[in-house]
Image (cartoon, each protein chain N blue to C red):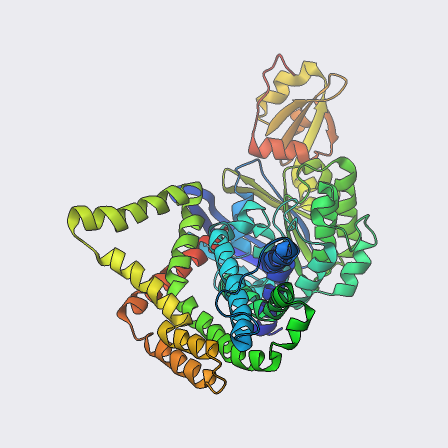
Length: 292
Length: 299
């Protein structure tokens, strides 16, 4: 099996409302993939379908060679999943969670969990309800990262956390879990924070997959031009994906592909950030000429 | 990792989460009783420790056992509705659903722990505590020397078959009350805050409007049959038990409690062949399926 996830023409619905619309993608091993999208774009629905908590309305979905809906328990034995922020049971102590996971998750290592928890400020005897939100998330990741799996699925794992907690979370993830063989699928809309971690990006916009690309290919495919405000109209005439203002009053525009030579000469090429590309592909807020 | 290992872990989870409440439910009432005993009056009626020592011993142990079992059942009844939405309300449902445990296993462990194991634990604890409570009452009435009057070995030998009968009865009674428990839980899981008004409305409709307005007594009769079945599962023939008590009161030493209890248990088993129970089990299975469906949809 070369791909850990294979989705083909996948559609997910809540009643008559379509949450994910005819999406196809593969996720090979050794990748850290960001699933980006605004609120309501379909990220959580897709994540739930990946772990068997939502049935496909149409199309096919295969995760680790298994049907997530029909083989949910077998699938969850082979992957790690953090569904949301601070969902650990508040009544439990951390050592009790280790005991429970040891009995429920066959690939879980209690020793490894204790070792990972030492990297955090969470004690084994701490009660979840006495921990801050950031500490709960760290504890959850330490527990989940102690599962010897090939795929980790994280749904908005750091939403609402402060910068220190978010940084700590991603450091723990990269240092202790990612080894080049395992893959991670992170759903988030805190695009700028995960950009440095990612190898690939999936972008969802209103249920449709608008981008599925590696960051390496992204740099080659998308071109951003930084230009003087005076060139704004000429740049706009070339129909870029997005125009926006940079600090210092300069304008910038993102093109899908290399712009024509006469347009390219109007500015200097810069690397488009993931945030700008995300805006370009999911919201497209065209600026008026006076703004640029 | 075997299915049974996961199931026992899920049972352990119930213990971890509810142990304080369970321990308080079982031990607080007798401790309270023992604490206030020195300040109250104790009256054994016509049969004091000196007149009918075996009766006093067996009655003390049996009543304590039954009381603690009853308290546990009342506590569980009030807890059932909230139990259905427990993990949703504290948001931990997402965590539990992220672990490789089946929906049937997870719900089954919760039900087994609360509907069967906790009441059984209360009954067993009640049996042990019953000796302490009886001894305290005897000391209160007859002084410390009164303890020597009670034939404790014989009390244990006589009360133990009763305990075994009741333990077996709890298993059977669980079948009889399962439709009611499942209705309460499924109702709470699906209708959430509307569950209590819906339950009250359904009871008024089924027990009052249907019989009085439409002359339909089937719901009323069915619920009564379930309750009677549950009571008979614990003691099918109370008259027989009463006769045993009278024999004990008159100093009877040779009564065969074991064979009486075995006979009573067999009658309770035969009582299971009931269309009311069959309908009840279908209702219980439907309720369980509704709980599973709710859990599959994220609680």
